[in-house]
Length: 231
Image 1 (tube, rainbow, N blue to C red):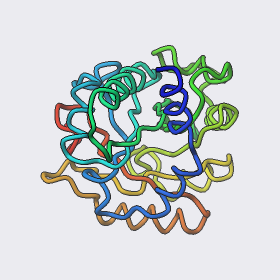
Image 2 (cartoon, rainbow, N blue to C red; image 1 turned 180 degrees about the vertical axis):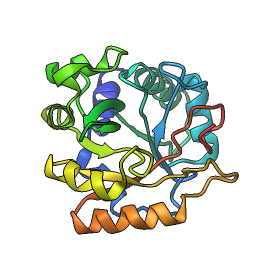
Image 3 (tube, rainbow, N blue to C red; image 1 turned 45 degrees about the vertical axis):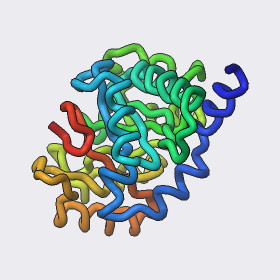
């Protein structure tokens, strides 16, 4: 059991593999192949972590990250569920899960959300951001949030860049200046059914990502009971 957990923990923090995945995703990758923006009851979502993982297995996801707000409890419970399934089942091609979190931060006077992936949850630097509440004061400054995710061995991504009080064209260059690793390019801003990334915003964000040499990710930002949509 210990060996299995250690191997799985290593995979959950494999940022090189995560980068390779992100470099090959496209508008069709989410939500049924990869999904890197998911919430559970451990923050403001409606899905139990076990129910989320049951859907992930059912739909045949290759990889995902649970990005609860300021908490990794959902990730921990999902990992326990997946480890039990691996031990009890001969099922192959189960989803890869990476560590994830969504942190509220201040960027150019605007409240934004920074997604952290592949970090070591036990790292002391990131502990203040995993206590279930929004950071305040200097701890909420985006440069410190990004630096902390990096200190914990993770990758930092600007969530839904076209959803803030300032435009993606204003925010992404500044985030890039603070060494952010990437942006959530494939995102559905109007919650369509079926889920599909918003074409205009996606193209804008992809162009900016290319200009600033940033990685691009995808996610449904699920808060409801179906990981194939946002609500």
